[in-house]
Image (cartoon, rainbow over all chains, first blue to last red; front, top):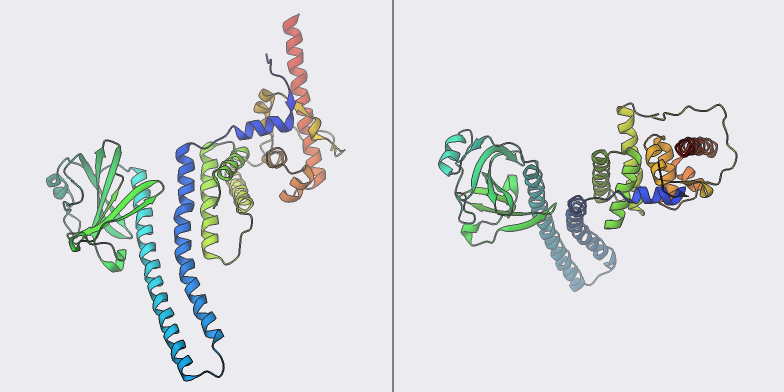
Length: 221
Length: 165
């Protein structure tokens, strides 16, 4: 038996539809998807801008130029070409790190079952016999603290190991793969005094660096 | 970039159509990804991203329904008559529990138009035009919906009278 009062159909539909809301996590995930794409797009736009700039300079060159003007134009074109090259390099770097971050965060969030359970690197190394490298410790992250185990995976098509850790504020994953610039683009090498690269993807912090010849990507805090 | 409010509204649209939270989330996420990819790679400018994504959500959900063969899910009969006389939906009244009980049973096309009308603020004529539905078809559907609401009300009144007796 209903004691509700009837209301205009429009109001009731509106009330029902607007009662469906996304959770904070869902909303954050969708908003961050846009942020990542925006960063990528801005990088590409910068590159396109410099291309357009070069076109404009070319078009504005007078038909009958003085020798010094030709020289100046040549310098300008050279400078723009160099800056284009730099932008191009920047775009590639950015795309590489974003692609790596997106891939590892996607894996991290799936939380697939571990292939091996071990709380120390000896157990980990004994298990990972099919890799072209030996899982390594790091000066940036204490791998023997709160270690849960690991599993085989890949980053950008390169076979990798992932080690999972239980931290106070949740699970973290450390990915390791043999580093090559061709596969992963330029990543900071901490042995050369460079600082790790830090990005946030889908609301998850990602830190990446090269150490002991390995690409290391830490997902989570 | 879409605002939080726009994202919520798109989710509400997806929910209105498919009535299933996970499917709605999948449709919204994939439509958003498709938009971002299109926006990044194509030189064409998308003037109204929300409307673009809404259409994309609609196509995805309709495809899903087709693949699951749950397209014409109406449980009530087509009806003897094909009534396309003018109908002022603004005058139709309903209680929330009634809407809850019939909302999932009415056709997805009806929910689509009703969402455009009630939540997005279009007139029913505009909604029909946006969704490519003939006015006559829409009126016929709404007459059946109204008949159904009245039938439900009659049943409830009878039950109330029975209870009073």
